[in-house]
Length: 408
Image (tube, rainbow, N blue to C red; front, side, top):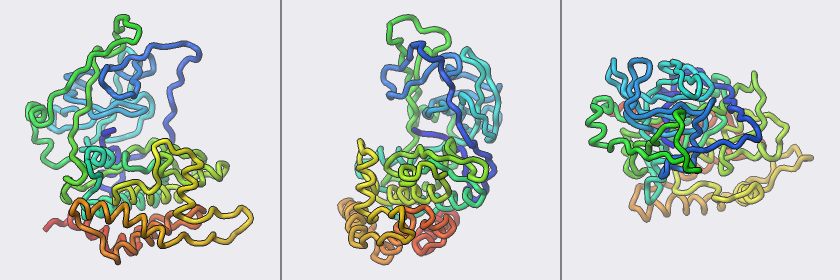
């Protein structure tokens, strides 16, 4: 999903409060309701009914200043539209929520056939890291680009942890690459010429009956502003961290269930279901996400993987699970297992594509950092500040980010 940046457009200057919880809209039980779907859109079901989505069409005006020009994407709680702000002539992401009201750069309410809706105005983003990799045949960022991305992600996580907040849903799909600075200089006509006009898709009711007024007559395929991962240049590698729908403050709220994808989900979510998640849970998912950014493949794999298979993969790489009766840390995982996986996922894929490779010193520092973060016991993992101060971050990742901040 291509989302706008909701937070940390400047990672060290966090001013946006983020939600502690995103309640779902309850539907009436036992009453079948028709689902309306544009014929060539994704399998995501955008529901248009009381309490559901607000019907939007290209050209709609909101709040006497925001004109909808294209669609950026959709999520569980909202649909995101690309709009032109008529006063300053800037492009913004207009996010229309079903419920929750966070404070962004602008916020207003609208009333439609499906009820009241909160609209959030943010800066649009170019694409997520998942979009960039999915749009590539080789699914790799250039080495200097991936270093700079990880450095910024680490700065963002270190900052929100210092403010007492757990993100709760770290993965590549929630890390967004920002648009270039001259994007606002495009007129709507120039935008359409460069990226294509909105493509309307006729909405058909599954039972063939007439579409009611609370449902849009057409769906819109989201605009593609991105590029294949290997074509992202270092000056374009500025990111923002988005989607704080699972974020929480451990001192104010106890959360026990992780909704992160299984491939990056911390093991305590399965083995210690009565123990609240903490900042350490972010550290586990952060480590898996860093590997996913730097390498061609995910650290743990499987499209249809279940909990047992995931635990088996984790044990194969990280060593045995800790015993309930033992307070001792289990034996360390094999260095050779890490180096073998690193060679396959990081080096060989880059060799095949003629890309810059890791040197042995960087490899060792990178593996050392990740091994410290991927400990089965949450209390054995380093803090975000300690990861930030690790050798690989200091010597390889942060210097690449400095090149973006100080290009001259």
